[in-house]
Image 1 (cartoon, rainbow, N blue to C red):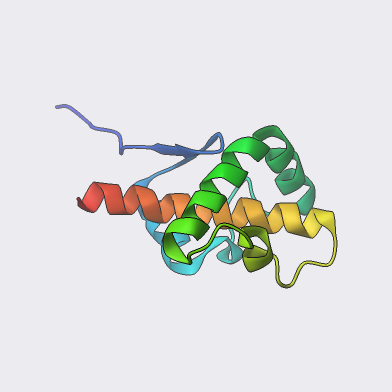
Image 2 (cartoon, rainbow, N blue to C red):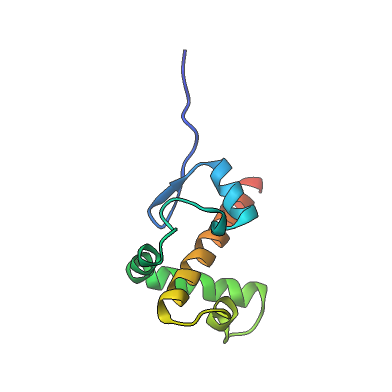
Amino acid sequence: MTVCSPAMYTILDAEYDIDTLRDVASHGLASGCGGFIYTSDNVRVFDENDDEIQDFLSDWYYDCIGGDAGSFAYFARQCEDISQLKSTLVWAYVELKAQSILQQLED
């Protein structure tokens, strides 16, 4: 008998199965998702992946909202300091990447 392991998808070095991606895409990371809970972890992840995160979010903002400027203001309306901003940008990136992966799988 052959047992197939579920397909795994990697976002910022964290692996997710399809069910977790659906949860993240539907409910966001606020519902709890390993690897992106603590602000200090999110700040570290942002610092290690800042170009990838900023490029992706800027492109998403341009494609979905419109305009060249304002993408970080769009994501960071409630942020009071740089740690909150970095954490919010990481969450937005992971949530939008999960949605993007699911969209690609549907196509």
